[in-house]
Image (cartoon, rainbow, N blue to C red):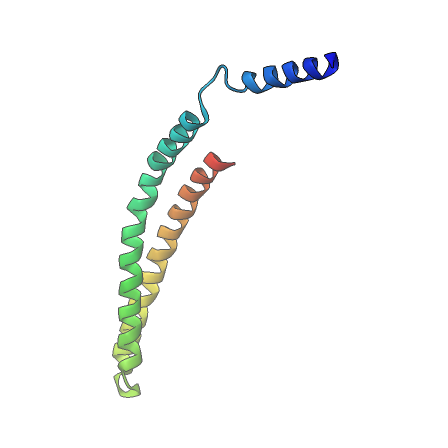
Length: 108
């Protein structure tokens, strides 16, 4: 009987120590969410130009597909534009990747 009572008191003390000191789980979660929003801002700034570049690339590709072999010079010009577009997207993706890596550190 005494062992049971002592065990109950010890369990109660252990459970109560989790409630004492330090921020609550809600406060911790709120802090993490605020940090995430702050770090996500540059990520979102990269997203819009990347989206525009992808749309431009799709437009160029559609134009190339519609051309015939007689319009080879125009195909070459559009292909050069497409390659430039791909290079720009690659740079945006690199920036996005670096920002993602910094966001990842919040959750690990």
